[in-house]
Length: 361
Image (cartoon, rainbow, N blue to C red; front, top):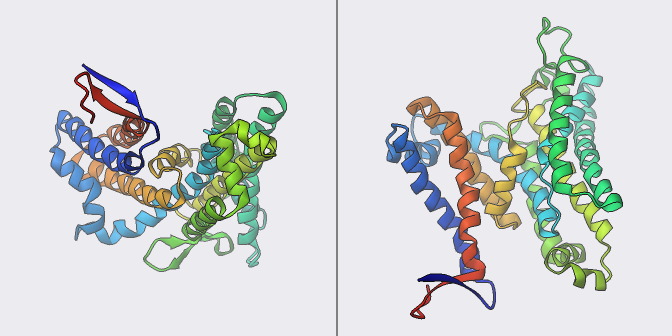
């Protein structure tokens, strides 16, 4: 009979190995799912993971898109990881992403058609403040009334989506749009356009900000006292209180940073790849970033690579849907398998498999 035996200490080997094991298991089970849908599983996996980078037919277009898709995922996941490390479960980054986009676009459109150089920096600030303010709602309710930040932040996503629909058809609606919902195209308004920094690479200011956020988070968590307080709060809350760590301050800090980074991600997206505020602007980046954060082990460098991997599944999934006819819902399920198998294999970090005969695995 097989049973689980608790380890004396968490396994460092399995801590680093389980993300790779989760990816392999996702490929295997995903391949079985694709086969059940009538597609060649090997061709499907190759199309998702290989063709966007190395195919002569698609790579020229797909490689720049890798950074375009990875930028917001990394930026949001970095913010979420700080809270997760402190035991603060912000599940509403999607709402903060939406509100950042609305505030950033609103700031840019308020100056239309001015060509002042100050407009884009003001949009970045507005996007960050929009996401920060939306994250402050669960922060205040948690610290003042003891509410659950998971439920509050998640419910606020649906409120943000309602705001998005409202401003798309009202406040930010394009007066020259012939009655269709949606704002002006910010890419066609030079003062507010988030254009590529290096032509043909996909590197825009949002991607650059994501890389800066990775460096900032790494320094904060590994070299700064505040990072130590964040980790201590998550690992040993009672010890943190005895050490003089203010839990209210940590809640506001972690939720505030997560909201600001998600808001900036929304602003960079609406002024760049998306181009405009529309009813269906939100693309699920805020939820997918949760997978990225855990797949990257809540470590900034790990999140960088996990964001690139998840972006690859986005691009490859679109190719698989286009070329092989795989339903988009199946691609989303394939992406969700990553988190499912990661959580499933994480059991080996704290437990080992032991047989009744005494043999350990």
